[in-house]
Length: 348
Image (tube, rainbow, N blue to C red; front, side, top):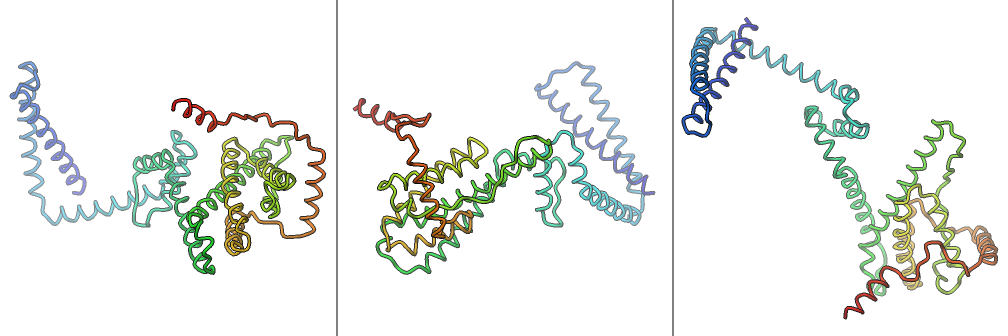
């Protein structure tokens, strides 16, 4: 009986679609929007007539079946559909893994979407793939994660700021309150990316059994406060800061990372220099900034006096041998801003 009911429902549905389609074709022919031969028009009319007769017959048979039997079949059908769906979604990850048309990054993203969905919410394979492609295309996951990370830093920073003693002198630099969390996020994101790229590099060397030595990463080198304090006063302070910056730059694995490091370093140094110029008035604020950088970036100041003295001697030895008459390869006295400024002045 179940098979008969299913077949009748299918036949009724098919003939209803055929009738709807035929009626639309005949209406278009009558209105002149579609031009067909007389034979074609007659064929459509004949199909409409046959389908109408068949529909009436199938409906009569279907209506003659007791309602109890139809209800029992419907219930059984719902159970079968639920089991089929359960199996479909249970095997979804396996199908995605075996899908040769999907790239590895798309498969991984799709797995993450499945894991993120509430227990009772499911998405068909095709819809899931479209969602995955959109996430990758617009870099949505990274954007959301970065936005969440920034909000977390902002919230912690604000709580810590509220606990600081009131300092009228620092209120002239209130923009730092908003600027600092952004710089910390940029530093944190960059350093995480550098570590991941180093890890990938070392894993590739290991897999390929290459003779290239892996990159040894023991953490970021520590900076020294006197480099910032005596910057623009002492060439050795500048040189020490420059060498420290170069060590971190050499950890960068891509050109993009090096470009970002230049910009992030400049922003970090700007904050440190502003606070350093405020001397005792900024000690609490400066310490808080350092604490957040250490927490989120694993970048800290050298506090061991022996290490500071040892580094000072190293810097002195290097600067004594350094030829300060040489320029860097990318040295250019006519900066982009200089050129723009000259052009603007010439126009006026």
